[in-house]
Amino acid sequence: MISSVMIYLSALLLTCSSFGLGFSPSPLRSAALQSTVRRCIVNINVVRTQLHMSVEDEADILIDVQKSATISPQSASTLYPVISKIAGKEWTGSCRYVNANLEHATNLKLVGGVKYEISDENKLTLSSFLTFPNGQTRQVVMEGERTAEESGAMTLNPVEDGPIIMKLSEVAPDTILINEVEKESGKIIMTSSITRVQTMRGTELVGASHEVGEVGKDAIEGHQLWRMMENIDQKVVSSREFE
Image 1 (cartoon, rainbow, N blue to C red):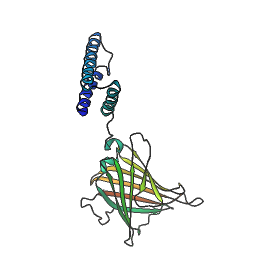
Image 2: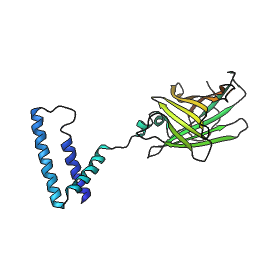
Image 3: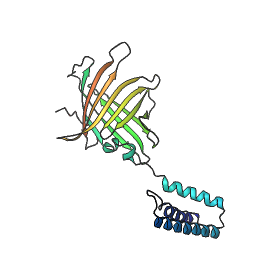
Image 4: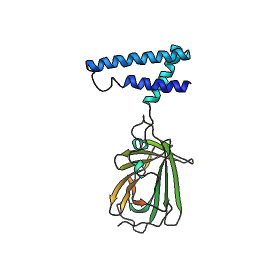
C-alpha cells in the first residue's frame, strides 16, 4: 500500500512542480498554478486521512519521492566521455621504442594490447599486456571508479597487490591521459597519452608513453610509440607494423 501511495504522491509532486519551472507565470498561469496546488493539497490530505498517516509520515514519504524524482545515475558516456567509445573491445598492436637520445631502437620489437571495461555500476577495469622480444608477457589489471562528484584525474588500483597505481583523466572527445605512479614514493614513472583517431584502416588508438628517469639522470629515459586497432578475434595477435 505504501508503495502505491508513493507512486501516487510522486505523480502529485511532479504535477505540482511542473507548473513553476523555467518561466515567470502570467496571470492566467498563476491562476492555473493556484488551482493545481489546491487540488494537490486536497488529494494529499485525502490519502493521509485514509491511511491514518501523520504529518511526519507524509513528510518522510514526500522526501523519498522527491529524491527518487531528482536523483538519476550518471551514464557511462557522461562519466567516461572517451573511454565509453572504445570500451568492451580488445585493442592490439605494435610499439616503436625510442631511447633517451631520441634514437629509434629498430631491433626492439614490442607488441601489446589494452582493453577497457565499464560495469553496470560504472566501475572501470583496465587490462593491458606487453610482450617482450624474448616472448615473455607482462599483464596488468587495474580497477577504479569515477563518481559524479569527482573532477580531474581518477585513481586506478591494481587488482593484485602491486607497487604502481594509475592516475587517469580524459580530454573529450578523443584523448586519455595516464600517469603511472609509485604508491610508496608518489613518483611518476611513466606518463602516457592515448588518442582515438580515424584513419584509412578504420578506428585506431595512437599512444605515446614517456619513461621518467631518476633525479640527476636523463629526465626521460625512453619513449614508447603505440598504434593499436580493434582485435576482432579478442585474442593476442602478431605485431601490426606501422604503415
